[in-house]
Amino acid sequence: MSLSPPKQRIKAKRAKRLVVLCAGLLCFQGVYGQGIDRYADDAVQRLSAYLQIDTINPPGNESRGVAYLAGLLEEAGINYETAESAPGRGNLWARISGVSKDGKPKKPTLVLLHHIDVVPANRQFWSFEPLSGDVKDGFIYGRGAIDTKGLGIAQLQAFLALAASGQTLNRDVLLLATADEEAGGFYGAGWLIENRSELFTDVGYVLNEGGSGRAFGDRVAVLVEVTQKVPLWLRLTATGRPGHGSAPQMQTSVTRLIRGLKRVSETEFPVRVIDPVATMFEGLAPYQTAAGQPAVPNIREAVNDTNYLLGLKLKNPGGHALLRNTCSITTLEGSSKINVVPAEAHAELDCRLLPDQDPEAFMQQLIDIINDRHISIEKIMGFTPAVSRTDTPLFEALKEVADEVYSANVIPTVAGGFTDSHFFRDLGITSYGYSPFAFAPGEFAGVHGNDERLAVEQLRRGVKTYYRLLQKFTVAR
Figure 1 (cartoon, rainbow, N blue to C red):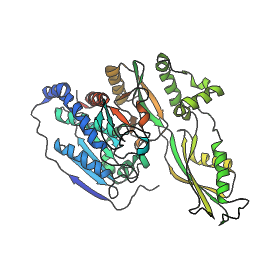
Figure 2 (figure 1 turned 180 degrees about the vertical axis):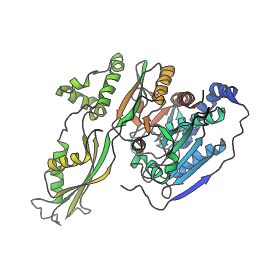
Figure 3 (figure 1 turned 135 degrees about the vertical axis):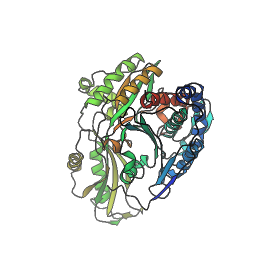
Figure 4 (figure 1 turned 180 degrees about the horizontal axis):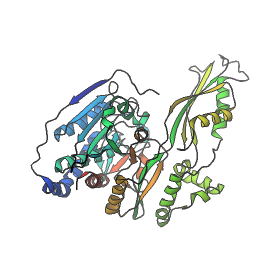
C-alpha cells in the first residue's frame, strides 16, 4: 500500500533558544529534585487541555494537537518542526542533541513516540463529556487519557525537564507526535518514514505505546511490548442477481455473504503458542497467583485442555487471542434500499495473525472455509511481523527503572492490537511498547471503551519515572 497521501504541506518553526542559567551537575540536581516535581505537577493541567482538543479519527484533525504541543515547546525555547501529510493531518517532532565523547560518535538516537489522534466516543454511554478534560476525584477524564495523550504529556514533560537540566547527552532524543495511528498510521509514522526518512537515519530505539505497569494486589509487574499480532484487514464481496424484495430468490449476494460469514465465525483456528507468548504467561503467573487470580505458568501444556481454553476465552479474551489467529466480523453493507435485492453485498473482517504466520496462506485458508466462488476477498491492510530483541542497553535501563520505582520485574509481552512500532521494526529499529504508569485492575478498561480516565498521581509519577529513564539511558557518564 502506498504511503503517499494527497497534497502535502510542510512548515518549520524555529523557537528562541533556551538560556540555561545553571550548568552541569548543579542544574541536573535541581531538575531531578524540586524541578522535576514542577514538571510533574504541570502535566495535569497540560493533559486536561490536550484532552479538550478534538482529534477524533476519523477525520483526525491532528494539526490542532500539533498547534497545542508546539506552543508548549515554544514556551520552553525548544526548536521543533511540523509537517502535514494532508490538510489537517499534522505531525510534530523536536530534538535534544547529544554529543560525541572521547572521539567516539554519538550513540543511536532515542525516539519518544505517541499518537495525537483518538478513537470516537459515544456520549450516550459515558458518564461525562468525552472531551471534557475534567480533573476531579483524583482523575483526569477524557478520550485519549490513556491512549495516548496521557503518555504523550508524560513524554513531553520528561523531555522538557531533560532539556532544561543542561546535562550532556550521549545521544539525541527525538520527541515525535504523529497522526493517524488509530487508522493504520499511513498519514503519520508511515508517512514520515517515507517522506522524511532523514529523521530516522541515526535512530536506534523507539519507545512507544503498548506496554505498562500492572498492579496485582500490592505487587507491580512492568509489561514491555516486544512484538504484536499482525493485522490483516479484509473486505469480502458477495455477488448475485439483483431483484425486487417482493420476489425472494433462492440465493442472493446477501444470503451468500451471510452463509460465508457464518462459516468464518464458527471456525476456531488452531492453537499455536509462540515463544514470546509463552514467556509472557510464565512471567505473569507468580503475580497472578499472589493476587489470587488464575495463573498458568506452563501455557504450552495448558492449551491441551479444552476446558482451560474455553474458560480463558470467557474470562480473558485478550489472552486467549494471543494463542491463535483470529477474525472478527466488524462491518456489513448490503442494499441502500429496503425493497431492492443488491447485486453485491460486503463485509469487513479484522483478522489478527500470530507473528510467525503467512498472510497469503491465511487468506487461502479463508477462501477454503468460505467455499463460495461468488465471494471474493480483498486485502485492505496488512503489516509485516517483527520482534524486538531484549538483550539491549535500553531494555536493561527499563529493568533498572522498574526495580527502582516499583521493585518490579520487567516482562516482555505480545500485544493483541497493533501500534506504529511495526513501521520502525521493519527498518531494523528496536522498538518497545512502554508506559511509565502502573494500572490497577479496571483502570485500563476505558481504552477504546467508555469513561476513559487517568489518575492524577499516575501521571505525576509517570513523568518522574520517564525522566529517570531518560537520565539513565541518555546522560553522558
